[in-house]
Image (cartoon, rainbow, N blue to C red):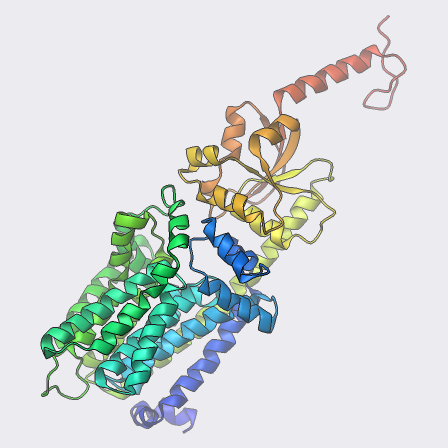
Length: 550
């Protein structure tokens, strides 16, 4: 089948492709891997990814366990083990560190294709498969954090559950369900929420059939085993929960959907996103049948409807968990919601378009074209980031003679600059730490405590704030007020409160380099200048002999 045939006769093409679904999956896989591999190779590591970098490179797996016991990373160990395996095979490039997430994200997409296609057609399965690529979720497909793996395991669990309920490859499906849940929960603790929609759907199926499916319920029980194994790590992570930087707020639930589906859209228009979601859920639920022996072809069983809606409500579950137990909510903890949203979108479209495969293929083509354009834009953005970091190093080198240390005010920026610094003979890049002051000014101490723990394994030059100030009368501070984490800084406000003098030494756009001196240093300098006038035979600042005062 030629491209011209697909463009001119989408209905006929869709019918042919429906008979050969691997062609659809293979074609989109090539495009996905091509774009995401470039992004993964060019993206700089940021703060959280650097935690992955240093912990996964520890010599022994027991060292990884001990690192996680400090609570510095609130994650289970499987993610680090998988990352360690990837880098052992493919080296320490950015691509190698992110390859597990690339594959995990695509596993979710393929699972969505199979799951949705079962109740519609290959064309609408392709819509569900591609939809996550144009959401906020895609950014985590090439980030060295566990979210891509969690998405992959959750998507596979949903598909295995569907297959198990239908008796397709029963032993393999039930085994896949249990192992997928084990994998998800062994990569991130918030994956416990993936059990909720599946248990809800299975409970509804049990009530309607009047029969308990022991195999599936045993798989759910197996999926919970990691909680018992990782209990010491969970207790260690709880030590960071009280002052965690991501405080839960009920408004964040709505904000999650807005950011996922309409990033960058002005706030006034974002309400439309919520309305569209509600209309879609209503239409989807109304068009879903209740199952039974008389269920027409392509109808959606009620238990699958419940599971899909449950995944779509993942942010609500994450917020309840945060409010009642963890005291931590960040958008990425609720990313599996895209599984439910994608299925709802594709199935609703299937109904609205009267099940015509040609229209589904056309929508899929539009989504794919949007993704390609988005990928090109992201690649340019990453190139800008690389150039900006190079400009930062040049800015620091050109305005410092190496005589006094350079303090980086932002802890996240300090971590990244220290990691990528290649000129080891130049200025010292230092971060000044004080847990109490960080908590006082920013309301959180988790970033501060994390860096202090991580310096055991990473080459970070971190000094105690009070001891440093007591032993230095002047130093430089690099500040970037326009940075994404500028609200987490406390150093300059505290120095001003204590009476230190800050003078702008250099400026480049939003980058500032301050010369910081103490009042004592200013007085000492003035005394030295006055004393030099009293000492005959010494030279003045302009090279001439000083005036004699006798």
